[in-house]
Amino acid sequence: MNRRRLAAKEHISRLVQVHAVDWRAMGLDRVLTAPTAPADAAGVLVDLLEQLRRFRGAPGLPAAEAAASFAGSCAA
Image 1 (cartoon, rainbow, N blue to C red):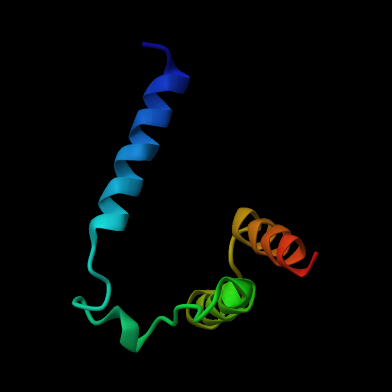
Image 2: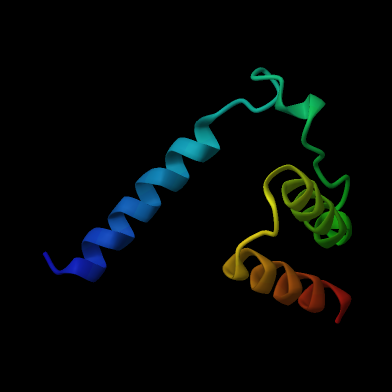
């Protein structure tokens, strides 16, 4: 199997693991917010990135670019 397929399978495997977590049962709802509607998702993402910046420094360029792209697509 080529490297791209292996990377895709690994990515899917990690997404399955992340989505299997009951984030409320883990208490993450006390520190993370979830959008109440799809239209609120960009704002919540921007808030989360701001929290990350305060705790850990500036978010990486890929995260910042993704947030900007997501926010732009939601505004359209």
